[in-house]
Structure formats: C-alpha cells, structure tokens
Amino acid sequence: MKIISFLFACTIGFSAAIYAQPKKVIADKIVAQVGDKIILRSDIYNSIQDAQRQGTPLPPNPECVLVERALIEKALVLQAEKDSLPVNEDDLEASLDNQIRGFVMQYGSKEVLEEVAGKSVYQLKEDFRQPFRERSLADQMRKKIVENVKMTPTEVRAYFDKIPKDSLPFYESELGISEIVVYPKANREVESYVTRELNEWKKQVEDGSKKFEQLAKSYTEDPGSKESGGQYNINRNDKFWDPAFISAAFKLKEGQVSQVIKTKFGLHIIQMVSRSGDDAVIRHILRIPPVTDTEVKESLEKLDSVRSKLLAGTLSFGEAVNRYSEDEGSKFSGGTKQGRDGSSFVTIDELDKDMVLAIKNLKVGEYSQPIAYTDERGKKAVRLIYLQSRTEPHRESLKDDYSKIAQRALEEKKNAVLEKWFKSHIPNYYIMIDKDFQACDNVKEWSSNAVANN
Image 1 (cartoon, rainbow, N blue to C red):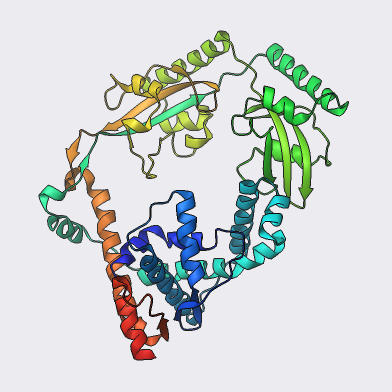
Image 2: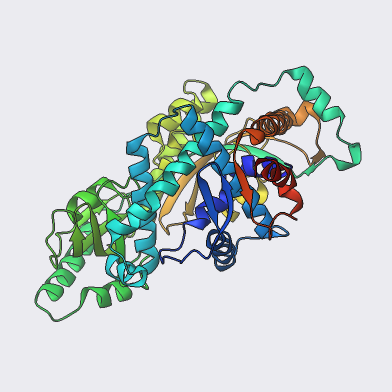
C-alpha cells in the first residue's frame, strides 16, 4: 500500500471532493465495499471531475487511486465504529455549517444554491452529515493507530544515512524574521470628513436616489467585494469578521442601512440584504481614512524609541511585540513571520519587496530602522524588523536541517505502522471490488482478500 504515505500526508484529500458538488448524482453501481460500507462508481468519477474543475493535479490512474483511498477510509471507519470512537457533535455541526457557507459563497446566495441543488440548505446539510461523520471517524482511527509512534535521534540519523547523497534536497537561504507593526491613525478631521461622506451615501440609499451596490462599486476600498457591489455572505459565529462589524450587521433589518461603523479595517456602512437565522447576506462600503505624513512620522518616532530600548537591553523583542504591535497575524507568535509551510522560516520569495530591501544589509541579531510601507490591504503602516537567523544556500544536512529530516523520518515510520496495521486487518473485513478495478496495481492486496472473502 504505497499510497498510504500520500494519504497520510493529505488526510484523505480527495474524499472531500467526493462531496463537493451540491447536485445529487444518481449512483450507477457499487464498485467496492468494505464491510457494510459501499463505494459508488459515481463517487469516484465525480471526484475526478471536481478535481479537474478546481485545477487540482491528478495522479496517474486517478480511478485506481481514488478507489484505494475510499477502501482505506471505509476500513478505518469500520474499525473506529468497532472501537466506539466518539464523534464530537459540535465539531461535526461546525464543519457542516462551514461547508454550506462555502457553497453559499460559491453560488452567491442561499436561494441560488438551493435552486441549483434542487434541495433546501437543510437537506443538503443532512446529505453531507454521514460522509463528514465518516471522515471524522477515519481521521480519529488513523491518529489512534500512530499515536505512540516516536523517533529517537539514532533513528533519525539512520534514516538520513540511507538517503543517497546526490538525492539530498537543496535549500535556498532561509530567514527567521520577526516584526513589530503599527498603523498610523488618521487625524480626527480626516476621519470626520470620511464619516460625513458615508452618511451622505446612506442618505442617498434611504431616499432611493442611489442604489447601495452602485455606490459600493464606485467608492468602496474593499477589493474583495468591489465587483460584487460590496456583497458578502456572513455568519454570526464566524471568527473571520471584525466583532464590531458582525454586531452592527446583525442589528439591522432587511433593507436597512447602518450608521457609520469603525473597525480595524476602517469606516463602513452596512446594508442588510437578507437574513436567515445566523446566516445573512450583506453589502458594505469601506472607506479607509487617509493618513498624512505627520501621522506616519509619529509612528516612525514611536518605533524608533522602541528600537532604542531593544538596543539598550531594557526591553525584550517579545515584550515589545506584545506591548506595541498591531498586526494580529503575528502578534500572538512573538511577531514571527511564518512560511508557506507553516514553519517559522521564510525564503526571500515569500517576502514583500519592501521587507527584502529592509533586510538586505541586516546581520543576524540586528534590528532594522523603523520603515514605512503599505500592507496588502492598502493601509499605510510602519514596522521594525528583527533578523533572528539566516541560513546559506546548502545541501540538506543533519546539522542544519534536523527538524525537517526528523519530521520526514517520523512520517515514514507512521506510514510503515499504518501499512502493517492494514495488512493485518484487511483479511478481517468482507471486501468486494468490481472487476473493472481489480486490475489496479494499488488495490491488488485488497483484491486478493476480496477473492478470499467472496
């Protein structure tokens, strides 16, 4: 079962695609079965079509890969049920709600989704309940099988020594970077001007002289909703949204426009389009009060003072981040910038051009001068950068890359434990595989047991 390694890393990646289409597809026939868990032909081919629509790369012989993946998940579910592993109902409900909200956002509204699916949102949610429950059970069973798998330094070294030296990966320079970010505040006069502007648009919507969506397309500074006339699908419990924004939105009646609301992003007016319980469709117009050179200068001076304390040793960088940084993305990680892989190391190509210039002449352990820049939301900001580490481009070694090597070694060991578990458990299950898939190399072990059990 060489595919298990890939499966373990992806946590049944294609299983989600099996349930990604709201429209019900009539099953043509059962192509495989483990115990009382069936796998439909339509499931397999709908998964492939979903992946193609989403631009997801497909492995060779995707039908065979997906059948094996489904067999593995069903076996894990059977064992999880036998071991009475629990499913957290609150987590399951949250996952279902997130799935439905994703569909609503994809189709633009709940009404359009229901029209396309030919079902109510409630019915769709119930359709997904069992697949989501099984996915949760499979994940829990997998974790249980490998929960006690550990690696010793000796094992890591033995794993590394087996790798041919000409096959060792080559790493570009990696950087450990932390930052303190502050956002200059617009002065009161500018903020008052923008507030009056928003209030004028609110009045125009209320007297019918302008449509909210037309104003949003012309004036909003939120690039994510400009083309849709400021429209979003929101849920009262989503943590993504600013609390002040959510609170103001759910106080509105359908068609009503809010007073001017201040959030961390700027100033808004919100219109409630439609609402169903904790779900709502809203429109908003965002305006970011411009800051002047005077406010930017004040923020530069503030961080210059912080830098002086860091250099004098009277303030640690972690303390400075907690006390001064206004960047929520890194504030609770000590200001550390995370790489695409979730690690605390980044490569040059992961940094914005302003930061690349700022660290060009920095040595490890040094702090940059405070620097003004514009963030990805278009807001003016000032930051202080701390270069914690910098590696030179190099071929992988135990000395420089132990944690990466240890993680790969651990995954390999877990995969071996999983393979051993499956080999010992497959004979215990009733297995049926359709003749169209019995020739697949990656399901031959399942096929041999299917013959023995039938």
